[in-house]
Image (cartoon, rainbow over all chains, first blue to last red; front, side):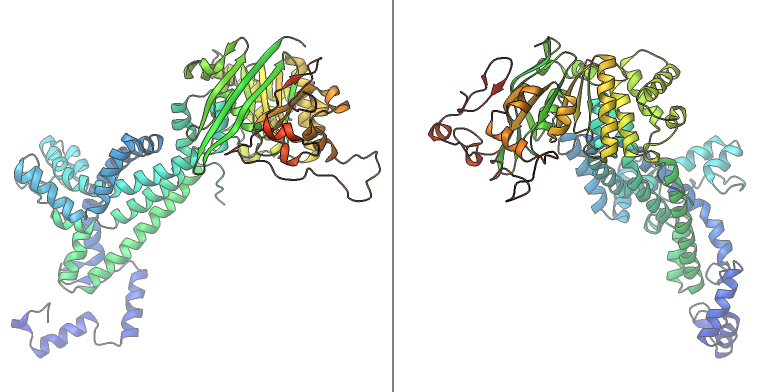
Length: 302
Length: 325
């Protein structure tokens, strides 16, 4: 009904459609068929997009990847220094100021913060480009090589398009980063405070190493382990689709696809999205576990 | 007595807690002669470790704070030094070894890198030269296959080996004085003896003075030339080791001696060992008079009214007790 529309929903058309979608079989048969196809990498056919789900997800993934990686870099670059400062000056002014911002980030829903940024920087100040996807409408898309616009525009030698793509990234990137920043800053701060109580910190001080060096060389790396777990989890969940942020900024990524699938009752699309999300998340978690070996030599990988 | 390297006068270190001000160190006086070992003995919580941390100026602050007194090390009051000057002293002329070798090294850096960092901090040498000196030091503290050890992480070697590495690190800049806070308590007995022998041998070789903190009088007897007995934040008796063992004066010292099992004497019929009755007094509101009054067999009126001073009975034997005042 939904797909055909009321004008074409004659009983014959509905029956043909049911057959086409496999809905005439029993549910267990449908399930087994779906799982079988899944093993072959076939996530089904998305009627609302008019293309196979896997193809659509792959087509959209670079947009999500570009946005979330940009946000991720921003987030890590800001949160690690903030966390160290917070941990070092715990309960003093710098820590309190940082806490105010991180709590703000944590308590504001991303869609609200995104809208706020659009309102201030686009509508009021006119500094940011309109929240309409990955490139300004008057700039031509570069030929697709990686699907990442920052890379493709440079490969194409089109500086204007590169700058446009970069401008478009800033607001959604900041939106995503700001929300997750708080979690990382707080984790790092807590672990740093705990690490500073350790015996080997006292040894380092007793050997004459200064407070700052103890903090940055001896405490930081030991405090990093739980923080890396947290950062990995956040990156994984972002890569799986920053749903709300993509909608607010009309970003044509996989999160947007999930929302459209829901809107059109497109099971195959939504299911495909969920499976895709799970796979990405598992991959990132694996990478995080492997990185432990590099941070902490006591971790054995065998 | 020989020339004095470290002299502490009326040191007071307090801690702010929820229950009030804890007077962990409440007027400590002691002296460490050049090239000799002073054993600081007392039960848990009497302020031994806080005294040591005060000398290093590493009392965690807050909650701790050095309220008053003087710590004269090598002719200058280190409580008056600026932090940068103090930092140059730590690990250089004044070193410290801690109780828990298992957790006292940074788990994420190789042993060589940690040692070289300390060496480069105090000696102007290249990284390579620092590594060579680290290797020398590991050799000196009797670590087998030291070249290999430099490349290993702390978790790859045993507790005894780690304590040797920490000793090597503490001695790498030839300090004038080493403070050792229960350096063998966490190790098993055979390893304890090895570490103590090593410390004695290095002291002789390098001419350092040691402040050895322990609750084990046996260790003091083996290691020290002088001994200070600490009780409830104060020194109650200070003497040459031979004097203290032949003629303990303070009732608390006598109590400590009686609680050591003697292998060559018959066990008393009534019980195996005599313990000191009662509990350590609260550090929050100390009693009027002598701090040991409630546990003392010889207590009399004056002990409850006035606090005894540390009286010198000649030949450096000092005691804080009205019986000998």
